[in-house]
Length: 297
Image 1 (spheres, helix red, strand yellow):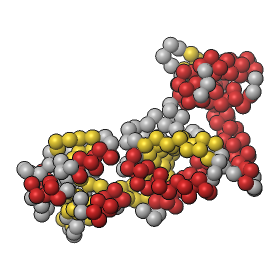
Image 2 (tube, helix red, strand yellow; image 1 turned 180 degrees about the vertical axis):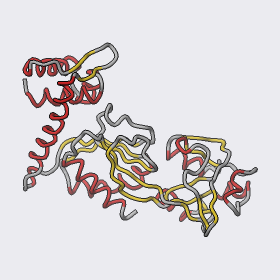
Image 3 (cartoon, helix red, strand yellow; image 1 turned 60 degrees about the horizontal axis):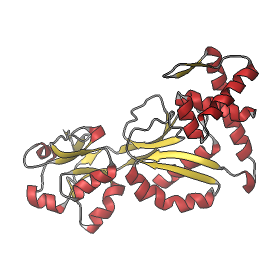
Image 4 (tube, helix red, strand yellow; image 1 turned 90 degrees about the horizontal axis):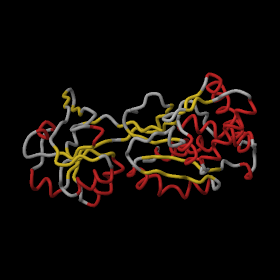
């Protein structure tokens, strides 16, 4: 038995909550993961896990061993990659999830520079706006905008995204150009709704001492940023977008900014990771790179 392989298998079972899901994220068979954990328990002569048909939970000894194992595995990774010299540069697979527009418009175009700096890191990139089970799916970190729904995650604020309100010229020709944000709640105006924000802008708009909370009716609600943008470009309703998404379309004339004298608080952008997982060097350099990248957006 390789003790470190057994330790990795045990940690993944605890985090995934099942042997099957752990095996999937480790690219091993379920039988191999089961055998490794059983061998580890036999070596330690303690039961680490309570197994039921629905869930796997740690015993008191297992919980204590898990906390130490996570730190040992992270320290081993740092030891292997923290020494001077190209041979010990950060390496390995890094699993990341982020919104699809951010991936397509900002991160992926800049990845050649990241890989030139860290050629031994392989990115497994999930590009979606769905809520990712960061622990169960063995994701190293996620990038998300707005307030974090899961307050238990460890997180670093990497940017504040400027927001604006926009509409396609075809929409404005049909519904007219609103002069005040309050008009968005009245006929004939419609918005495109994003599922997590309900039917309104999650941040108030301000002009001098005046404040307005924007609400409206929608003909489409979506949970994907690319579909949301496409709906606005098609004239289905009014959008609120980060500058990086709106900028090329404003330049091309396919979106028109609205309410330029109104201010919207910026949207915080976060990188989050499991709270009980010591950050490996490959995760730390990726986070630092994202902070550097977003400073220019």
